[in-house]
Amino acid sequence: MILGRGWALVLLAVPAILLLLRIRAARPRAAEASSLLVWRKVSSSDTLARRPRPPLAAWLEAAGAALLVLALADPAIPGAAAGTVRVLLDTSASMHAKGADGRTRLEAARAALAGRETVLQEAARPEEVLPALLAAGRPVVVVTDRRLPGFEDDPPRLRTVGVGEPGFNAGFTVAAAEPSPGGGMRVFLSVEAWGGPGPVQGTIEGLGPGGGREVLTLSPGAARDFDRSIGTVDVVAIQFPGDVLSLDDRLMLKPFVEGPTPLARGDPRGPGEALLRALEAAGAGRAAGDGNPGEVVLLSSGEGTGVLAVLAFPVDASGGEVRGAEVVAAADPLARDVSVDPAVTLGTRGGPAPPGEVLLADGAGPLVTVERGDVLRVRFGFRPGGTWVERDPSFVILLKNIVDAVRAPARVEILSDYMELGRDPSVGPRETREAAAGESFGDLEAALREASLPDPAGRRPLAVMLLLGGAALLAGAWWTGR
Image (cartoon, rainbow, N blue to C red; front, side, top):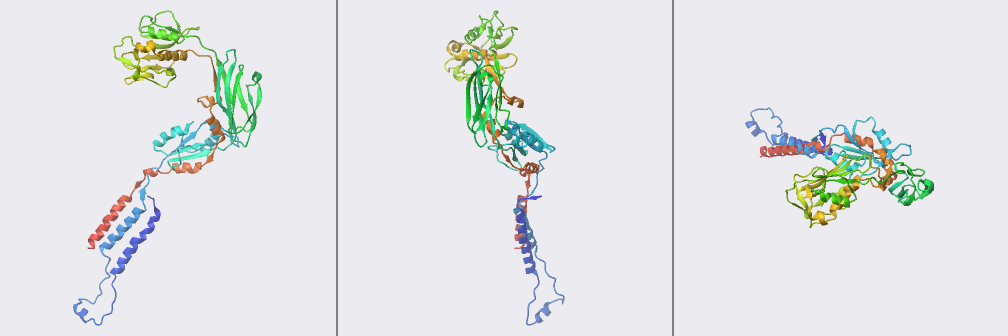
C-alpha cells in the first residue's frame, strides 16, 4: 500500500474527536433536586442505570469521516516493479572523445554500467530510437554526453545521464574531391575547431607540395577552407595539441578511373526499340544480337563481359494509357531530375504492378521499379511509348541515370575513420562540435534505482472506493439519527 498524500492521515483526529464528543454527550450527569419523593414513587429499583453507549449514528458518522480522510490520503496498490532496467547507450562519434583520464566517454560509460543487471541497447543517435522505446512502456535510462532536445527527464519513465566533459576538438567537417583532367585530383576541404580558450596552432598534411605538411592556425568556432589541386596522395590529416577526438582528423583518398561504356542489347524491331534509342542517347553503345523479347540488357564492354542491368517491360500491354499528369517520381538516385510532363502519355499499362523499390508511380500503383543486386533490374509496368518517348526529355534522363549507375564514373572516394564505427564514413560539423561540448550531469546510480521502481502509471488507486464507502456510512448515520 502506498499513499499519495501521507500528511492527510493527521486529519484522522477529526472523526476521533467527533466520537469522543458523542460519548461525552451520552454520559449520565448529576443534578441537584429539591426532593426525591416523586422519583422514589416511580423508581422500580434503587440500582442506578448503566452509562448509556453512543448511538449507532455516532459510530457510523465516525467511520464515514475516517474513510473520507483515508480517501484524501490517496492510497493505492503499487504496480508491478519495472524489473530489469533498459539502458540506451549513446555510441555517436562524440562519445569516442577522450577525457582527462585518457579514457573515451564510451569507455567510461561502459565501465560505470559493468556488472549491473540492465538491458543494454546502443544507438548512434539516441533521439531517433528513444520514442519507440518509451512507447513500449518500460523505463529508459539514457547514457550520453549531451542533452537530448525534446526529451526532458520524467522519472522513472525517462532519465538522462551525461558522462562527457568539455574540451578542444578540431576536425574535417566538409570533404569532397574530383579527378583532375591532367592527372591528380582537386580537393575541397573544410577544417573547424571548437572549444578551447583561443587560437590553436597545428599542422595539416597532404595538401602541401608533394603531399607535405604545413602549419595551420584555427580559432574556436571558425572554419578554414581549402580548394587545392594536388597529386595522388593517400591521406590528408590534421594534428593539434589537446585534440580530444581523432576520428575526424584523417581522410583517406581513393581515386577510381571511369568504367567502360555499357552496351545495350535488345530487339530493335520490337517494343524495346524506344529503350534502345534512348539508351544510346544516354551514352550507352549498341551490342550485337537481338536479345530476348520484353527486355533490354546492359552489358559491360570490358574484359569478362557480363550483364550489368536488365530493363524489363510487358510485351503485350492491353491496359489503359498512362498519363503524365498522374505520375510522380520517387526520391531515388535513379529518378533524379525526372519530371514527367503532365501533358504526355507514357505508354500502355500491362499486367500487375512490378515488384521492387518504386521509381515512378501513379494513382493505380507503381509504374517503374528497381531491384538492386549484382544485376540492376528495372521493371516497367507499362510498354514505353506515346508522347513520353517522342518529346519528353525525362524519358532519356531516367535511362541516363541507369547508365550512370552501372558505369562507374571517374571519381575520388573519401573515407574517414568513422568507418571504424561501422557506419557512414561521411564527415560533418555536428560530430566535431559535439565532441568539444561534452556535458556531465545526472546521477547514474539514482537513475538506475528510480527506473527499477514500480511505474506510478501502474498503481491502482483506492480513493474512489473509500469516498463511496465514507459517503454510504455518513448517509447511514443520518438515517439512523432521524
